[in-house]
Length: 393
Image (tube, rainbow, N blue to C red; front, top):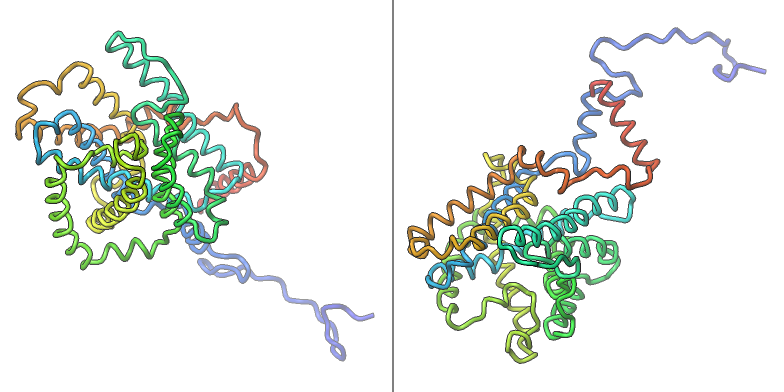
């Protein structure tokens, strides 16, 4: 028999000893460290996009400003017009971005664990903390109920439900029309009640599903210079319409927490307002995103802490409300309103910083390793990451 390494008709010869590659030259089957590093960098989720962090930060600033305007807007038609415009798009923008980043969610154990520790647990913590805080400051006896989201916590509950249903929306042939139909039906169904704030969960659902359907190129379209230019007259017209609508429209429509009948309107107004508000919200959201810078800014890093700013600023707004600070006459004048607006933006910015994140991470992002079984696949991924780190790549 002949050697498997030789060819018929030739004398077998030993192969020459393998020579190590020259310095800095990768072997034929071994990727270079630069290639490995680039491969890992290109994996989705490994790098944060400055545009989305900027958008989240600016959206959360608008949320805080809107909450600070609420006790003051009754005395200023201009402020109420600005409040109406901001409330038309600030939460839809935030929800669309949340949906966009939920596209990869499935029932994988590590993602379910993250959903519990990053959304469900903070909901329980803050749903308990807000009533206790009110009792402490005002001496009242507010009851704790996980069924009735309190103030800002509705978003956590809604996000939990929306994200759990993500695999289902991936299976539906036309997810956005279906979600819009559900929202329209909810707007004419007062019997849904207030439990779990299901009206908001269902009426805001189309924005989340839209985020699931979007691709990066869709966001690039709204960031064109032509869109940025058109956004100026669009927002100007929106402010004029908001000023006109102040005495003519119930701003509760923007909260999406009641059916049409509960707002004193005929049932058919529910579906009509759902479609009309979604059209206005998407238009203003596109204009808002067109102004969001795509490069790294001084506030870009704060985009990772927007949930901290969202949940924590509520305590300060409520404290000021409980203490009657918003009742001071000086705050109901233009200079006072501007001061409150600037202060709200500064406070929520501070609450998004890393020191605040480290201080409250136990409540917002607890590890809770003791509560979960060890996932073999996740352990293997972590072990591989440690090996990469030791190898210096």
